[in-house]
Image (tube, rainbow, N blue to C red; front, top):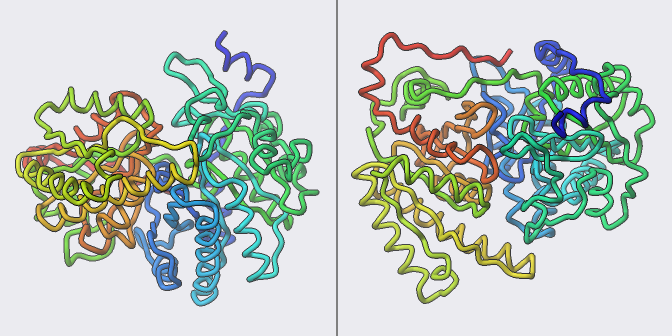
Length: 513
């Protein structure tokens, strides 16, 4: 018996939940979830939802009124990129976003709720971000928060919570408590506890004691909607609520229970991993996108809304740009596999040590841009930062280094986009993806088209700016196996003439209810 099987033995089996039941309940309420995503990888579990990289009231009004397949979206993602900010900056950004979302909701006549999307490996500004959202709601609306529901589980990526303890599945089918992984040693967001109640106590500096945390274990979640709601009847004063989840049906069962708790009057905020929103709005898993879907359905300059069916006549046949900034071990192995499977790709490395020296920095960026631009004329280009991680014992200095490196990558991408046609862009790593999207490609509004791999790796369709219509792939540093990056590149680098020679075209049906 595996460790996971032994841990699950005391609990009931998962209960099948039809997501259409959740979607109908969500539609009846008519509330839109505003998801404050601390890096853009949170969109990898959803499809057909708007994404904002800016948060003025007008941006929210666009998102609230935008139609995808003729319908308003039940959730809107806002790319906050707060995982790259210091605590004071993250707090202010959360406050500004919630304030503007509330103003736009009032102007648009819609009701909104809030989700703080964090990392499935527990990194990020917690409890600062949900605390800030709750405080802003109190200041602006006079409404108190009864509970903060914490659900880091991401079954598609092998992150599961059993008995209140958060685990990562390893490549051999075993489980490792999250505090025993490299993610817990993060220079900025490190931690020592794998039990979520203990994690809450640790990250709050003891302000939120483990003994006061409500646990929704698998017995409760698989026991039915009323049991979940009953556990929350007494929730008050933004009490932390941690939830088990091992399967998508666990997340869906939890969603129904939370919906019932809110129907009974509980006011909840959410601090969650990527797949929670999919379950909470009743969206089915979307099949991985095919090259035909991506390039035949992309926005063509001058066309209508996202999802237009005219093929991209201006899409170059070659010239994909893969930008790799993440330094976790998995990303490095994926980069090695990509180079092995795509030997014709031009590899350009941006040496981090040169970026920390103001004298060398501009010359390094210019030389890198020239190499990338030249390479795109021949095929795919892999732009990576050097693999030796430069870090500091000071968390704020580590963030500063990360920002300096990311700014240089942004400068290269922006200059490249102005100089050469690009067929697609992949950004590997959370901070890298965020900065490439908002600043390198100038994306302000986009639509999540769907995943590139089962349940992970998101493809956005920019609907404005210089990257309009260019497929942009957000690839987290900590998901997939060693071959996943190469698999995504293989899909995107298929030549359009070869695709159109295949007949008839068969686009998988969109699976959102």
